[in-house]
Length: 57
Image (cartoon, rainbow, N blue to C red):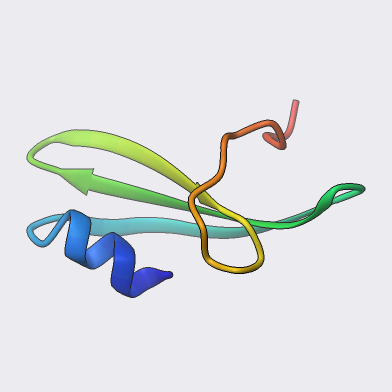
């Protein structure tokens, strides 16, 4: 998963990594800072990019 993030944002810095356990399964959130922009990426337990329906309220 982190390899995918680094490939997509080679000059970016990983700022945060989180595991979210939900009734739908385990999801991973990675926050990247790239050229001053913060990007949040989400992955399912297989490492596939996923929509963010699991963010804490």
